[in-house]
Picture 1: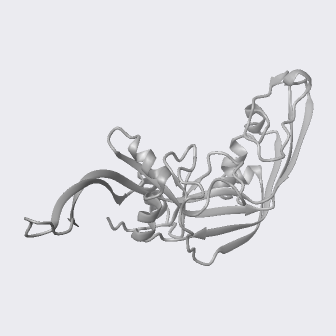
Picture 2: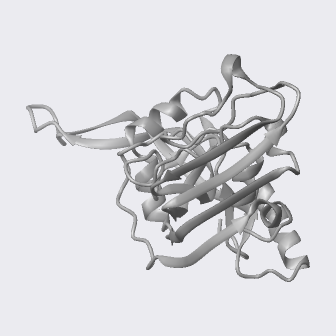
Picture 3: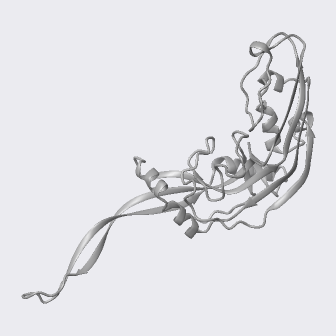
Length: 272
């Protein structure tokens, strides 16, 4: 199925602990759930041939502007998820926070039908389809990544009356900050700072509907000529599975693209 790509669409990662180098996501990775992002074919897919990466530099913004929509969607999600502090603090107006990164590098490719077919023939994918009751499944291929390089977060918050800290999303080497006994005492000032190397903040996907069909192939085999035979050939059949696929729209992306067009945004849009 030949889909019209429309506006390039990226998804915000469900958590901010996905390392860009030696992490679970690479171009060509296949997953079955965009919230879990567990690779089905880790290390068992052809090398993708991406276009030349593009780099955007100089990101730095305060929490107020981020939440107000003046920053990247992934940065807003980063703040809203709490970054290791309590949800009550993260949602408070009494917070001074800044997110910055040296650059955001975007890399993507357009997989050919041959490339997709080779990915689907990998043993883990075949086993996954074999385990499906209907021998069919909707899967996603990672076709683009946005990586934040040298991401930094710094902030402080003041709160009152023994607010209980809740577990938030943490990046690698980011300590959770809490008071004695897991609570913040009255008028306690909390400071949070961390830095992370290259992490994935967004990804692009193509969705495929895959079917694994059973079919029989007839083979003519030369058995050799013996006395009483005019021909030394016999026909026999054997079972073989054939994997078929078609590209289908991602419903959330269709909605996001329509909203982007209505807002006059044509370069790219995001699914949060």
